[in-house]
Image (cartoon, rainbow, N blue to C red):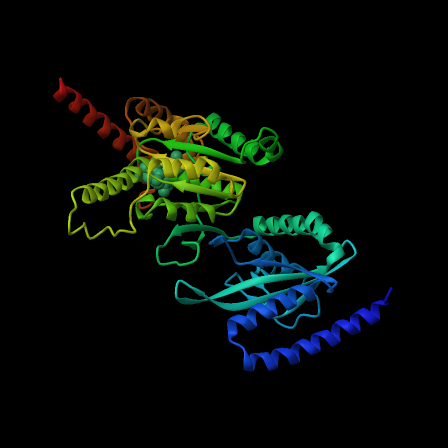
Length: 454
Ligand SMILES: Nc1ncnc2c1ncn2[C@@H]1O[C@H](COP(=O)(O)OP(=O)(O)OP(=O)(O)O)[C@@H](O)[C@H]1O
Ligand SMILES: [Mg+2]
């Protein structure tokens, strides 16, 4: 049996011969034949190489690759002294633990894990994509062939969990909205800094506690979801009149769970295929938010109808808002992507729909499994008022509270309206009196409306 050094020196001589051969061939043969010969040759050579390379591309089946994001987050945590440059993202420089760092192209990083030596590098290449030149990045992980199974069984899961922990500790949450012009995943992100929290949210304390318990149970029960064969996601429907805190509740949930928000405006999505591309590039630990679901589905379905009619009647001049690549989305498309087989892409996801009028919704949307919990956000109760008084005025009792309690039983005002009254900072002394005036006016208006109606 030949020694390792004999094999290596044979390998080196063969490589040198191939280089020479390549130079001669490149001058004599057309490029297609040349490429074929080199491909076959390198395939046979790789038989002798002791190394194996994992390639993690930026996009996978046309959508962004979560493994790539995990590697990108993980690598800066193992930076050794061998590195002499790093990229810094737009993070807060005053908080070093929170910096967004990336490695630069062609630099190599060695990681050691359970006795294995693993070499990482970042590649960049230009490829042709729909007649355009596009830059594509990929991370390459070189390990020994004999360690390939161990890398897959322990090292890659280690990267996934480390990246997830880092991302969940990052201070900034993001809100993503759809931008047609963004040729990547289509999502455009902004930093999400909404002040709403559960302790400032005005609603009955028992219902608030129920929602918090439900969320915490969801986060804890990964194993349970797996055991019963369900994807780890949960659907909420928030309904109630405008100004009752539906959007504030979504913000409070995102802040509490440290989840990013994907704000999906169905009206601007042009087709089911586009919807699928958007939904499959959503990362885990996130909220998929569809606000005013009744209006947005209607707008999108109307769009589909207009197109169908145009096609049926053979209109020469279609509505300029629509093009042939703009067929609109369908309700079944939406349900399939949020709930059917296409929905299982990434775990730990809340899907939240909001509406002002639950009765307008298609019953298909409300079936159990799609919507796991309905939350009614109603008019301001006395308990909700006390929460607002505590947040806005820092008072938990007053002799006027009893009058306010009685008035709130008789009139329907939203927490937004009450909050607006409590914000009249130019007259802080008489704020409760002015709120009582406001409620009495509303009561008078209500009474005269009722009398007119008789
Ligand atoms: N329950 C609440 N607790 C605390 N603040 C509230 C509550 N409801 C409304 N507000 C205040 O009113 C403003 C509007 O509330 P929000 O946008 O959450 O209402 P909404 O139910 O989403 O309304 P819409 O149906 O019009 O979208 C908020 O900025 C918040 O300050
Ligand atoms: Mg809202």
